[in-house]
Amino acid sequence: MKIEGIKSCYDKTRGLFYFARLCSKIRLHAAGQLPAEYHELLGQGFDGRTVRYLEVSYDDLRAQVLAGKTDEETLDWCYANGRALNDEQVLIFNSFMSKRGWHDDETDEFIPEMIRQYGFPDDGRIITDFDLIEMDEGRWTPDQWRAAWK
Image (cartoon, rainbow, N blue to C red; front, side, top):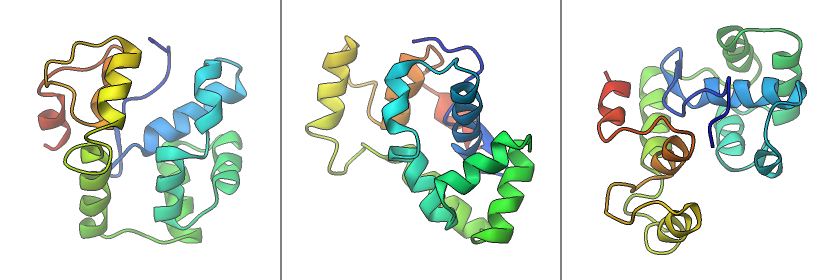
């Protein structure tokens, strides 16, 4: 589903995948522009993994975003009030997030079930949660991940 203003999982904030998407979802929800299908997982799923990794609460991060901070300013706030990430911790986070669903506990059931639910071709191209999200929102390309890692 195409959603105006939602950012890609691969958009980076200070090198960190997904954070810009998290902030964009908060802004869209507050403006009444985030589809209802997304509401249940606000602060959960990848949102929850992100705030837990940064050691801040979703509600506190949400308050920073809604106070008008940019993605970078919000991440700086997380680093000051949770934990600051070094380059290796960013690499670990990006690697985990971008590969979730590939050779893990979601590979055999969750990913194939989501492919069926979304009606995507089961041709081996979709192997991660990021692939599912990006394809659903109309941004997916086979080599999208390569460009994101540069």
